[in-house]
Length: 337
Length: 274
Ligand SMILES: Nc1ncnc2c1ncn2[C@@H]1O[C@H](COP(=O)(O)OP(=O)(O)O)[C@@H](O)[C@H]1O
Ligand SMILES: [Mg+2]
Image (tube, rainbow over the protein chains, first blue to last red):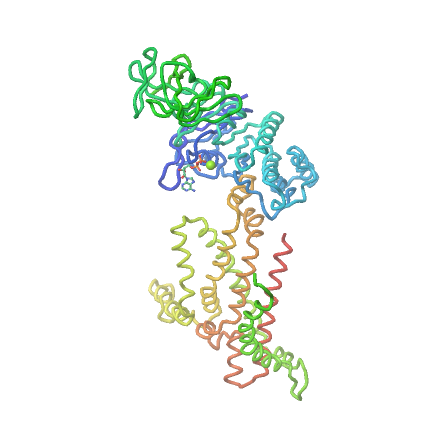
C-alpha cells in the first residue's frame, strides 16, 4: 500500500487569469476513500478535473502510482470520474453507456458484454441495460454513471458530488452502496461533497478545503472533535464561536465572563456543549424548536444569539422567556486565531 | 393551443392561400412543362434530350460535385468553428457569433463582388503572386471552378455554422469530458459523441448549404460566368438567351429532385447511425 498513491505537489489551477487553487499539496493513500469537503466555489471540482486531466495546471505536478501524469492527456490517465451531472451519453442505452470505455479499448465482444453486465449488476441495475438515460430515474442514472467508471477498473475513481442530486432517502441508500463498492473493489476513491455529514459518514479521511487551500486534513473523528480553526469548527457544527479577552468571551455585541482565563484566542461550543437551565448567564429565548431527543434554543444574550440544545426533560421555556445558561470551559474547543 | 381546430385553420388560411396562389400554382405550371411532349401529352423526352447533350451532362455533374464539395467543406469548417464558439466565454461568444451572422445581412451581390477584388487579374492574390515573383503573368483565378467553390462556400458557410452551433449547444454539459476520461481520443469523441448528438443540426445545415449551392445564381454567374456554368446559370441562359422553356423546366425539376434527395439521404444517414 502506497502512502502517496495520488500525489499533488504545488498544484496551481485557474481559469484564464483567475487562480482557483493556489499551490495545493495532497497525498492520497492507496485504497482509501477520501472526501474533499468545502463550501461551494472552494475549488473541489477544479481539483478533480485537474486530477482527471481535463484541466491543465499552471504549475505543480500530479503523480499517480509513482508516475508523473501532469502532461498525460485525459484519455490516457486511466482514472475514473463520475460527474455531478452524471454526463451519461443521451443517445446510448445504459448498456452502451457502460460499455463505452471498454469498446474504445477494442476488447473482445464477449468480454465487453460480460464486464458490462457485471458492472450493471454491481450497481443493482441488471435488466435495465436497454433503457436510455431519459427513461431512468436520477438514482438509476447515477448508478449507470458509477458502473460506467467502475468497469474500466480505474486506478483512482473520482466522484464529484455523487449524491447531491438525489433525494434524501436515495442519498442514504447510495451512501451505503458507494461504501460497499469501495470495500469490495478496493479502488482508491476521492469524492467531493459540501455536506459534512456525508463526509463524516463515508470517508476514511477528510480534506477540508477553503478558497482553494486545505484548511484541515484528518479522519472524520479528528475533524469532528478537534477542528483547528474557526472555519473548520463552523463546518463541523460548532455553532457558537467567540473570541476571548482575558477571562471573558467577546463578540461585536458584548461580552460574557468565563470561569477562568482560557488558553486559546478563540473558543467554540456545539449547541449540545452549552449548559441550559442553570448557569451564571441569562438570556431571552429568541427561537425554540423541538428536535425529538432535545429542544433547540436560540438564546438572545449579551453576546448576541447563542445556540443551545436542552435535554427534553427540562421544562420548556416559552418564546421571549428568560433562560439561564453557561458556556463551560470544560466543553469548549479551543481554536487557533 | 387553440380553442378549436377551426380557429387554428383560420389563422393558417392567409399563409395557405398565399403559398398556393403565388408559389405552388406557378411552380406547378412550370414543372408540368417539363413533362410535356412536343406533340402534346405527357413525355420524358425533355429529360432524354437534356442528358444527351454533353454540355448539359458536364454542367449537371459539376453542379452536383460543387454542391457536395461546398456542403462537405462547410461541414468540416462548420464543426471546427462551432466547437470553438460553444467553448468561448459568453461575451466573446456573442461577438464571434455576430461576426458569423454578419455576412448574412450583406447582399450576396456585394459579397460576391468582393471576390473579384481578391481573385481578379489585378486582385490581391495576383498582386501578391506577381509581387513575390512567383509568376510573371497574373494567374486566371476568376471564372474557374475554384472561384465558384470559394464564393459559394463563403456564401453558405454561416448557415452551417449556425445550425451546428445550436446543435452543439444542446449537447449536455460534461458529456464530452466524460468521453475523454473514458479513454476517447478527440477523433473518437467526434465520431462517437459529437456527431451522433448533432446529426439533426448537420442534416439541416447540410440541406441548407447543398440546396443553396445548387440554386445560387449570382455567385456562379459572377465568379464562373459562361466558362463555369452551373445548372442555375444554364437555366437562366435557356430562358433568356435561347427561349427554351422545356429544357429550363427540366433543369428546374432536376434541381428540385436534387434538393429533396439530398435532404432525404441526409435524414436516412442520420437515423441509421443511432
Ligand atoms: N469554467 C470556469 N471559468 C471560470 N471560473 C471558474 C470556472 N469553473 C469554476 N470557476 C471558478 O473557480 C472557483 C472554484 O470552482 P469549483 O472548483 O467549481 O468549486 P466547487 O466545485 O468547490 O464548488 C470558483 O471561484 C469558480 O467561480
Ligand atoms: Mg463543484
